Image 1 (cartoon, rainbow, N blue to C red):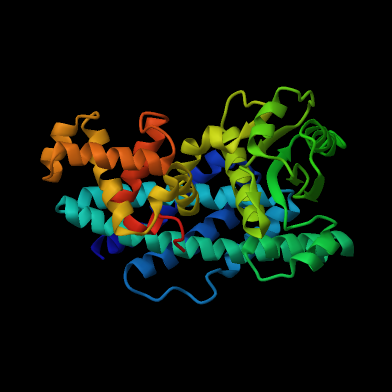
Image 2 (cartoon, rainbow, N blue to C red):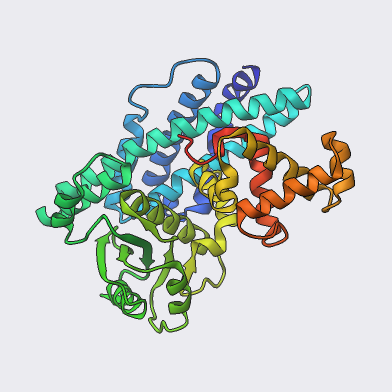
Length: 396
């Protein structure tokens, strides 16, 4: 790809710019010259690998360089929490993508060429960095476990296996964690000043009490963050419970409630994304709910978050069937034409009564009027229109 060749020709300048942009989002990376130098080295390795993939090289088997592993250990020992480390990778991905997107837009000869280049490079970039991040997280945990007590290390390792989607025995895991993975879960991230001893644990206990949680799992995620899962808390209870919270000196973010091991993973990822949004707010609330900041979280370019958003907005309308696809197409055009069935029918080459019937069927499938939360619905439909089945529920 000629754009990849051009990017590689200016690699030093691009890497320096990415390093500066990344450090603006995650200031810990500029803690001192050693940390920043290791950060730039890791960026250079990642950029070279990604450009190689863009140019047709196979994806590296290890998907993680010695520079990345060295930086991971350095950051963990300097006190960076795992959620902040994940944020740094996602932020770096966004900074790289903006530079790459600008180059594609400037060099593409037409819209179709640009769209194809975007789809191919986006898929390659997300695949590479997702797998790299998995390896980095394993190294982070391995380094922490080498320096942690056996009980905490065992619990932490087991939670990481669940979060990675490894096959586990839920009953045995529940015995180790003293927490039943087969139940309904609400994930939270609680963070604050590391010098405020016990503030995060106190906040977790208060939230659990206010929401009448049946059980709670706590996992320290470094010097400043605490990962929390509450069992038996529904989303409506979470919203109501926020008004009763009085804890101070700590902030929290929560994902949607989910069931079983998959729900355990999804609600935690959403809590981390909500924390990422809250961290950028000038005056964040004490508790940031993912569903309140979901659209902002989508701006991270996280493909998994995008799929979850589409699934939440479309529900059964996101099924991989010709009938659902036809309803989505009709509804997309209908909303683009401001609800004018006549204009939509002309674009779809069908009768206006057919359009009205399909819109009615779509509303029945959604379980709500299409005018309710219309912006989010239109965003979800537009994403599916552009990216296709890759963002529908069930995509890998």
